[in-house]
Each structure stands twice: as C-alpha cells, then as structure tokens.
Image (cartoon, rainbow, N blue to C red; front, side):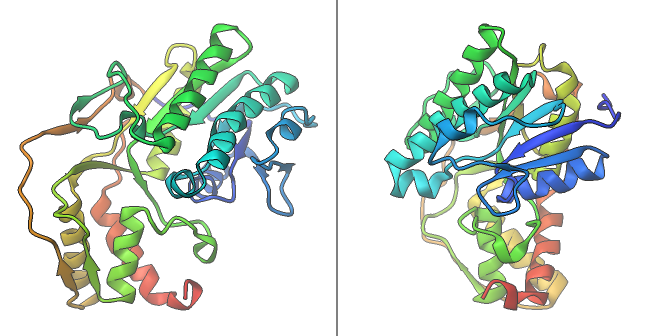
Amino acid sequence: MKPDTQSKTVIISGANGYFGGIACQYFEAQGWQVLKATRQDGADIPLDLDQPEAFSSQKVDAQVDLFIHAAAAHEVTCREQPYRAVVQNVAGARAALDFCVFNGIQKFVYLSTFHVFGYPTGQIDELTPPLPANDYGLSNLQAEEYVQLYTRQKKLHGMVVRPSNFFGIPADLSQCKRWTLTPLAFCREAVEKKQIILRTAGFQQRNFVSILDICAAIHAAASHIKEVPLLHIAGPNTLSIRGLAQLAQQSMRDHLNEEIGLTIPNGTPTDEDFLYTSRYLGNLYQPTDKIEDFIASFCKKLSQELSLIA
C-alpha cells in the first residue's frame, strides 16, 4: 500500500537522536516539511523532557499533519537514572500528547519498543500481552497507555509502533550516542578493536529492522491510523546475537579484507523459538532492508571515518 505523497508537515521529537535524525532525512526526502523538536540550539520547537509541562503548552505557527514522538530516555538512562527516565518517558509522552491537542494536531505516532515484552520468546504479535522486565519496558508501556487514553477520549488519533531491534547509519556519526545498540556496537568493535567480545553465549534470538523501513511503515500507516492503533514493525532478519557477531566478522573479511577476533563464552543453546511479527503490517508495508547489508556499509564507513568517533 503506497503512502499519501502530498506535501505535508511532520513534527519529529527527538530529531537530534539516532532514530530521529534518520527519520528527518527520510521524511524530507519524501517531500514533507519537517519541524524538529529537540533540546538543542536551533530547534524548530524547543523540547526538554526534563521539563515536560513547559513543552505541552507551546504554540506552533504551522498546520501540522503528523507528530512522531521519538524523544525518550533509552535503556541505559532507564537503568542508570530510573526516576529521571520515568519522567522523561511517561510525563514526556503525556506532554507531547497535550501539545498536539493544544495545537490541533490530529495524528500522533508514539515510537515504543519490543522491550515492553521483557524477555521475549515464542511468537509475538499485537495481541500478545506485554510483560515488561525493567524500567525501560515499563515506562514505554505506560506511555503507550497514555496514547490509548487520549485516543479513547477522542482528543486525537494515536498509533503506537513497536519496532524490533533497529539499525541504520546515523545521520551525524560524530553525534551518535547509541553505541550500546548491538548492531552499532559490533561494527565499531570490529573496526576499532579488531575483535568482538560477547558477554554471554549469545544464543538469544532477535529480529532486526532498519530505521528507514520503520519510517516507511509509519508513512504508509499514517493514512490508516484510525484502523491501526498498534503496529509491530519487524524486519526480514531474525538471528541470534552470536550470529550477528559472526556476520560482522564475515563482513570484515569479505569487504575490508581484515580478520578480526571473535570471543564467545560457552553456553547451552536454547530450544525456544522467537518470532516477532505483525497482524497488520503486511497490508501496509513490507520491510526489505537486510542487516548484512547494513553491517557491510557501516563497517566500511567506520573504517573511513574513525577520527569522527575517537
């Protein structure tokens, strides 16, 4: 299903972040006017998640067709600063919703995470009950519930998207702060340290989806937001963490002619299957970007630009 291609305006919160930076590039390439909501100087709309109430009552002098809320405390902040993270994720989402109501913005997309399922096993789709295992998953789930509440109250039309593990080449490599994400971490270790060291046996299965595919799915689903209030976005690749590390090792050998070390602790393989899927995505958009292509491209880029991340 093709998205509406008429010129429109989107606000992306967290526009200076890993997801937000790539999302801005995507929507600009599709002909959208993009307004960036961040705490950085030069933002179109100032947004400080530590002061959510101040954001909620700001007035924007534009007709906005879509708000994508991607500003949030990630898993590291949730672990190290849990009280601050809860405010940023839960109160921050509520403030973004109130901002939309105040400005008459009818369509709201909340970027959540598959981590609302805690330690996922088996087949997981939109009907699977969430079971968070930490503050990151729980605060995202609570934010989701605010989106559902405002939708039930008919204040706007909200959609929650839950991507699996996402990947993509950062819009600004020198400003990237998400090096703890496994696809980024493995590429960086391979290029910088010439080795990848796993802390566990790495048999756990994970699905991987590109940020560009997530953006394209949101783009396509925005016209159907009333019918699809919750959408899982999974990519074409499901593999183990050790399989991902081996993929990075092979990519270094094939594309950069470098042999790197790979250390994986001993462990017992799990018999549990893992399938992250969606009941609705197939009718809207089909993600196609493969993790192996990203690893090859990103390792090449890192090898050329090491000075930017030193």
